[in-house]
Length: 252
Ligand SMILES: [Zn+2]
Image (spheres, rainbow, N blue to C red):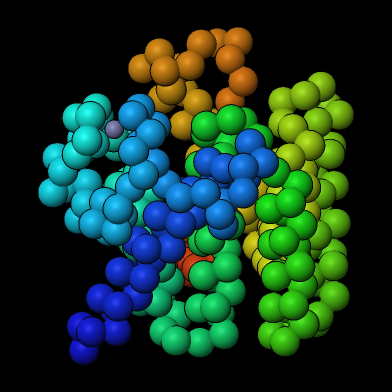
């Protein structure tokens, strides 16, 4: 296989990841992410073009600000690398196609939600509204069969989390509910249900690990957005494979 296109997609992913990181950090604080330029959070030196190359800048500067030598968060290269890997996985699985376009939208939302939710425990309404619009436009041109499973998917996602909020008296937040609702537009009913199932497993494992390593305390709130987004990407890319595997293995 020609390596140029996969490499191009991976590099585009890391560049977009670097941008999504900025959006994820600024949007919940209502800072305009299109105007002010990136600066070192310690010494406020404006970053130059050579400081903004995804992954490479971090490696060359050994994770330190070139001006004041203070440590740069490892979160930056992790977000860039994750976005690159996710874009590449989507391409490997789907090729250049309409579903690949949908996957790119989903991964973009995933990275921005994860950054914001881990940092501030907020999933901004403006972000959800924007991606609700994107998913509706996408499903208008590339509908599920039949088209109304997008509507039912949205209702399923919204309703499931609402039920959990009522039953658990606040185990999940309104942001999670709205997020699941708009994911339903893209995923449809079946994959929304699978996403819910996987998100519960991922969220449980993640919270147990964080508790075990004492990153969070027993009473601390746990951001559920990243688990939901990871589950939605797995469902979108591999959901049918997973379901086929399950039914072939357990229902012979
Ligand atoms: Zn600095």
